[in-house]
Amino acid sequence: MRAILIGSGTIGSAVKRALEEKGHEVVSVGRKSGDYQADISDPQSLKALFSRVGSFDAVANAAGDVSFEPFEQTTDEQWANSIQSKGMGQINLVRMALPFIADHGSFTLVSGVLTDDYIHGGTIATAVNHLVEGFVKGVAVELPRGVRINCISPTVLTEAVAYYAYFPGFVPVPAWEVGQAYLRAMSTPITGRILKLHKTNC
Amino acid sequence: MRAILIGSGTIGSAVKRALEEKGHEVVSVGRKSGDYQADISDPQSLKALFSRVGSFDAVANAAGDVSFEPFEQTTDEQWANSIQSKGMGQINLVRMALPFIADHGSFTLVSGVLTDDYIHGGTIATAVNHLVEGFVKGVAVELPRGVRINCISPTVLTEAVAYYAYFPGFVPVPAWEVGQAYLRAMSTPITGRILKLHKTNC
Image (cartoon, rainbow over all chains, first blue to last red; front, side, top):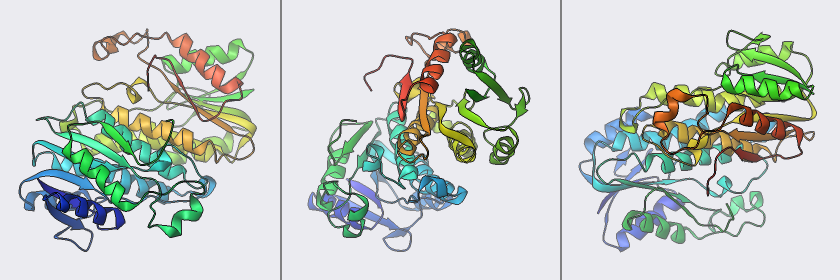
């Protein structure tokens, strides 16, 4: 499998390791680093990426930002930038890559625990995560040529100590386990699924 | 209760009747009709509305458009307009009204059956409905002064015969019953809830 992997942070690095351990080829894409450069919040950069990158079997995304801000202080810019990055950025990633991805290929997007659990200052994240998960569920029935799509929902990472204060009582997950969830989504026949790294009744 | 009601279509009219039958005062808002004019996709028109409309206890929304299009043919404009109308339009409605709504007031937004069931050409609707429902769930824990928020998820309306062909096997709901769901959301102490007018295991 030749996989395009967007994002080179803690999750992206773990996904790269998980894929390479199984012998898959990983093409790394970052805003400034990686084998190719692109920014998911810029559709033109995605269009340029997929016209140059050659054939591929999978796209895995581990990029996308949202703003954290108490709801009453959220600004138009914070909403717009968050929608444009983690929300429409991932949707546009699928739109731009779909004409080029191999038959029976797969997309793997990312949401997060704030879909299911709510914190002060987390409303934008919760809303945008829902947008992403809704897109994945809806588009799964529309994708042609056996192309699949799933979404990984990590909780706070064991490695992200700086975030612990915002997630009291959230049991962290190590990045390697998130990498395994990506590998599972990309390597098994599931589609339209949200793979959650946390326990929830949602 | 003095309620601001946005939208004068089949659902808006049913909500108006349900509220007035219980003796509530309804201030109707439409793009071109109603007691006041505003467009939820235009934040400035919302800001102007709430600076003029006086005190109120509730905002009920029955407006917002999304595009229906096979996923591979969806355009940037269809995505942007749908996010801007039914998605950010409803989020901005809450943002703009919140400084003016009475203590213990309520917001009632609208999503739809395509959150839970998927049709060809429905991916934008599914994604935007999820955005709205995620916002409602997330912001419910952040609203000050006892203000509540809920969301009504109607299935295809009995009155909307022209839509039947797109919803095969979806049992329609009469608009009056949707109006009762709004009345229930506005009159009982629930918050962060999605009231579904259809049967689902989601």
